[in-house]
Length: 219
Image 1: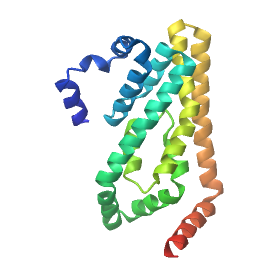
Image 2: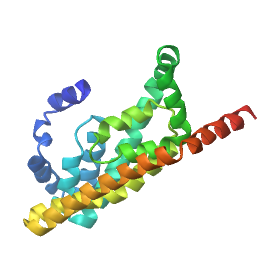
Image 3: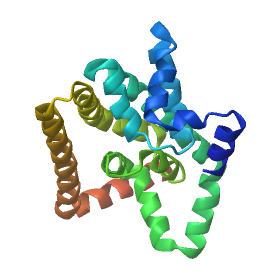
Image 4: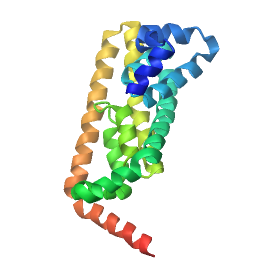
C-alpha cells in the first residue's frame, strides 16, 4: 500500500484515483481506450486499489459486453501478477512460520494445495477485497492454475453484472440499476451457500483428496 501511495505521488497520478478522472483519461486514447483501461485495471490490482469501482466504470464507458470483457482481462492479468509476486517473495517464509508457530493454520494451508479451487471461488465474490486476496492466495499453497481458473469462472459471472450496473447508471435506468443490484446479491448468496453446503456435507471428501495428494507425492 505504501508503494502504491509513493507511485501515485511521484508520477502525479492523484487524479487517476477518481472514476470521473479515469474516464476522461481513457477517453483521450480513442480507439486505444480499451488497452488503457486494461492496463489501469491490471496496475490497480497490483497496488491494492479497489477494483469494484473500475468494473462499474467499465460498464459506464464501454457498455455491458465490452466493459465486462475488458474488466475480466485486466482483473485476470492483475490477479496473476499479484499472486506471482506474493508466491515468489513470501510463500516459503509464511509456510515456515505457520509450520513452527501456527500448526492449525499450516494444516489449512496444506489443504489449500488440494482444495484451493473452492476457496478461491468463494473469496472471489465482490464482498471480499479482490486485490488483497490475490496476494493472500499467493502466500498459500494454492496452485496457480486453480487460482486462475476459479478467478476466471467467478469473474465471468460477477463482471457482467457490475458492468451492467455501470451501464444502467450511465443511462439512469432505475429498473436496470435495481435488477443488476438484486442479481449481484443473489449470486453472492448462492455461491456462499454452496460453499457452506459442500463443506458441511462432504468433509470426508476433502480429507480423501488430501490423502491422495500425499500418496502421489510419496510415489
